[in-house]
Image 1: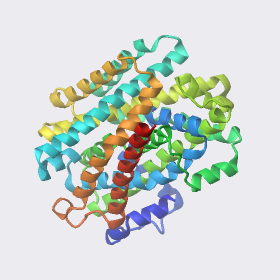
Image 2: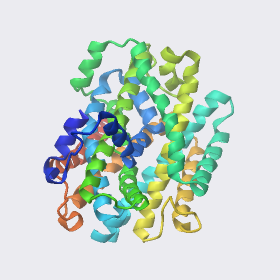
Image 3: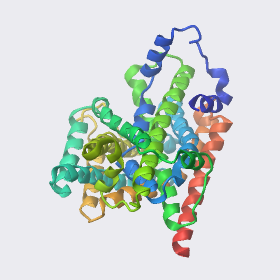
Image 4: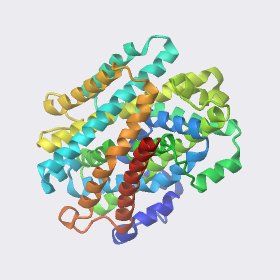
Amino acid sequence: MVEILYSLLCECDSEYVVFSTNNAKPRRRVRTFFAELGPGLITGAADDDPSGISTYSVAGASFGYLPLWTALFSFPLMAAVQLMCARLGLVTGRGLASVVRTYYSRRVLWCACMLLMIANVFNIGADLGGMAEATEMMTGIQSYYWTPLYTLLIISLLFFSSYRHIARIFKWLTLVLFAYIAAAFIARPDWSSVFAATFLPRFEWSSSYMATFVGILGTTISPYLFFWQAAEEVEDERAQGRTVPIDDELRIATTDVLTGMFFSNLVMYFIILTAAATLHVNGQTNIETAQDAAEALRPLAGNAAYVLFTFGLIGTGILAVPVLAGSAAYAIAEAKNWRGSLEDRPGLSRKFYGVIAISMVLGLVLDFVGFNAVKMLFYSAVLNGILAPPLIVLVVLLTSNPAVMGARVSSRPLRYLGWAAAVIMTLATIGMFVTIFWR
């Protein structure tokens, strides 16, 4: 599937793509493949954050196998948008906000930045709350002690280490999410129903289903990932230096992004499937706590399900929250033309790190308002789904503009998929509000 989409997305860029591995030894090709993975893979891993895990668990528990088709449906949309962001960063050598500042008015620029900040702060608060509640489940120590502790831990790591170092360590914690794949098979789902739900999309015209659909789109096609992808491509290029031609870099970025997005949606698919085959089948359709969501892993791990779930939630949170805070800092710094990079020490980029600290503190404040952690995680995904379409439109317009991209404007398939993502997410949001008011 990844190879088919790769060919589609590269259709109009084929003159730039050169494959020279036909005679390479298989082992060398595999080694090269993994060596070339970078920002796209980290972005894909960060996409399965606590908000995503909660949203997928809620979807499977509430509607059974019905939402499985969304994993296949959202993959080409999210891959196209992220690939456009990666190409924008590589071709221009600047982040998304910096390019918007150059080609659009200040009103458009700050509207984009405010949409991002609203979504990110709420998402940071939700992820911190989810991590804290999962830890409370394991330790018995109440979550409001853990949220400031995790906030200080992540701020300290970002201030006194590099994000790349953090990601190398903690991204391995996300591997426990593969337990959902094993649990799905052990739970013995009704495979005929699984395949039907996967390949025959069905809608349920209700406010809860439409909110879940918006949440799934919002947690897979999230605003913070647009800014992060472009900024990290620039950071990666600066760190390594441009040692290969730009066309080869675009080819490498395509492989990287498609791999990351495929990994993200694979985990998404099996979280929904596992929750459906365990929770929904047994009548547990309303997830209110982290314990409820962890129960989906019980067929595989028994009482250790809570341990697996906790490590998964903490691992993805420690990976994703710096991405959320970092993408906000990159956007504001680029909009204000400040110096800013996660590779800089705080003394060199005080304002940049100030945005990170403020974002984290505002997210922490939300956790003490009294929201239910699981519901807050779910509604942060819904909020991302509502706020993403205007930013997708900006990305499509910028990457289709020869003044910005030169001869490397987005291909027609990329543009069509980008517009489709914006339109579908907008219609889903309208449908959600219609069903709410109609009810």
